[in-house]
View 1 (cartoon, rainbow, N blue to C red):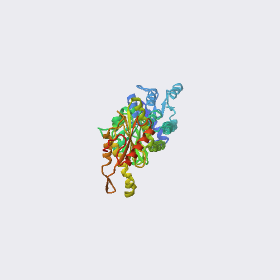
View 2: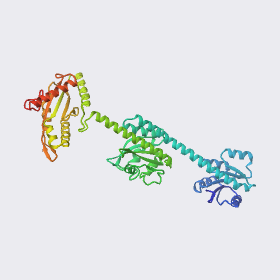
View 3: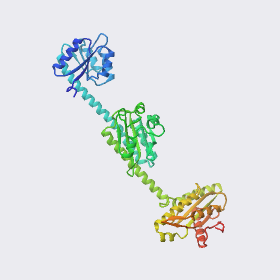
View 4: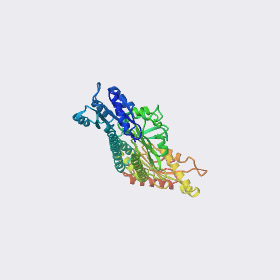
Length: 482
């Protein structure tokens, strides 16, 4: 490709005539060349940056500079750019030394006809070497992403909490993938500002100034993270310096980052967070890398689905699906804990068994959906009557249990029952009708009514049925006016 266009030759030579001979030799063989001749080290360094040559041709020694020094400068600047000595004084030993130190070839000045073929070979060798280097770099990049993919896949198998998975994913990206920064965030209420859920990498110290502006705006507004979250598709920035979607480009560049990828993390086909990874290299996230990263985000998303299903199953195992209150299993556990504490500290525990009076009439007259609505309202009112340490559970169709731990004596405070009865008796709007219901409550106390959960629940249940038969709203130790 280079030989099909004008070849840019940087010629380190103090004799203009010799430079003309170089140009003539190249043109004679069909090579179009633009030659820039320099004589000093400062001119040479400046031309490397500004002229950006395809090849360097140099005399071995000049009055104020020498070819070997120029070769060292070039190799620091570009380890692959071809360098050919053209000299009449180089000699075999010095030519061998030059090749050992990185020269591509050498041509004697009295044999200029060999120069064009040497140039062509040097350019082809450089192209091949650059291709090998690029392939090696690509393999290294993909190996880093493979390491991240493998580590996170392993994490998704053993981790069962979302927060732990997010932290582990960021740690793996920083440690195994050697990325400067990885973080997982979510827009607050679906919009800015961004809330960081987990982060890792050396760039964490720069995180606050990279992703925030003032106190509300994100560095990548309105692109990248917000677009990834909204569109549920990965977005790549492979050159931070020129991509306007990175609003705080100066800060990101100052932190040493040149490429960014934002990956959506989905749950139930909806983005719940964005995984953002920063690389210090430009053009890091090519098509093959993105295939692996898409697999990575899919694995995390699959794990999030599993974690949520497991959480939901665990929740349903211990909670009532209709009201969200603890079910009988969780009630027994909470009551056992309350009794254990009471035994150690010589305290009392009250167990209230509550039943909604004539609940069947509501179901029969208004339908089961109205009955369900009634139960949800009752559950909410009971929670409002309880303390934070109390347990309100639903144990049957219209039956509830309230555990009041850490009581001071063997009798329940009547005001507690009064508060519950009055709360239940407030009107409830059901199916365009205002309904007023009442309840019957039975009470059992630890230690006098029983020493274990089963006995106390049975006593409270019996007291509730006795209160219902007597047409009263309370059981043991409840004032008669109730």
